[in-house]
Length: 472
Image 1 (tube, rainbow, N blue to C red):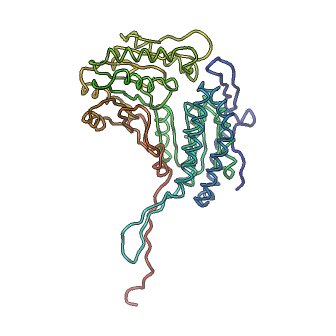
Image 2 (image 1 turned 60 degrees about the vertical axis):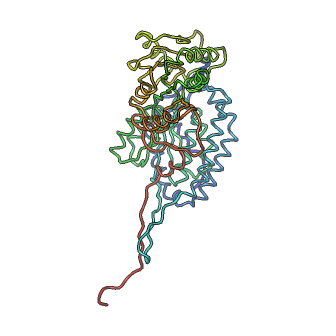
């Protein structure tokens, strides 16, 4: 097994799909064009991954871990160029892009540590027999990753899949193909040929992957609609599915908290990365007793972010149109715009931090994922009323509650049918935490030590000494 980059994006026109041309969302300038993989390239990538997988699985876990550490080093060495590409393709501020790359490198190192420690269990049987379980890699993993944190998310899935002996075919988002291509160029040489292959392309390439024989596990981070299509396709092939999909995360605010602090938390949750975070605050329920002060403070937080140069643009104009469509529909249904709410003039895909009041559950801005810097607010008369509204809906990614009452915090934890409940901090958590999304937000553990289990199956072993035939 030799090591060389595996980024399948070239070939004759007949072999290729469409090209992907990306424009900088800050000013509309062209970033560049990447060729999309064609059907033949998709098939060859999967075939190669399947051919080399048994040999890769036979590599000692400690040796695989050493390659993952080398990959982390390569990622850090290429961080500056990768951050520039990330910033130009998605509009993400360069310092945040660098932080995402460092998080990706640290995650590769984390799985380098966890991989050799991933083991089965001893079982209690006869004193003269051995009973235990061993973990076995599923085989070929197809990873489909998003644009909003493209390096950190991809590195986590790649690290866990490779650490457990799977080979990987990676399709990055079509909204940041240069980032995905460069990531493949940095990481693939750290592993034997065929172990990690990158395919550039859009939904058509994703559809080809889901139709391809020979894939044993799909891991997808992205929209609920795409995740559902992957899950349906996997039913026909028997492939395992791991998916973290859309969210519509609520923030419930009790009447005993400082309204100015609550507004700071709401602004962090709704406006960070211009609202383009899977676990962003998407809808807010605030107790009537503090609602006036809270809304005024939240509007001030939005105005500060709407000063020139503070808030990054959305990833592209298509995303901006989708966000603004929800805002304008809410206005027509009676929502009051306290701040923002209008597409600004000029180039790029900028959209202001927006605060909407008098929102109802019938509005898409409350019922659907917005994925933009929008904070829709509903006033509630009691904590229980707010909890009932906040706990409703089709999604189940995460939920947030701000309260000084332990009884209300415990009630919220028990009520929310989500993968993560955050009390008094909209972001944060201990290292190694892992969660299982519910409903349309996905299935399976998408990160943490439990992700290693998702990429494996378990084999039970029973061993006894040979015996003698009866009567002999």
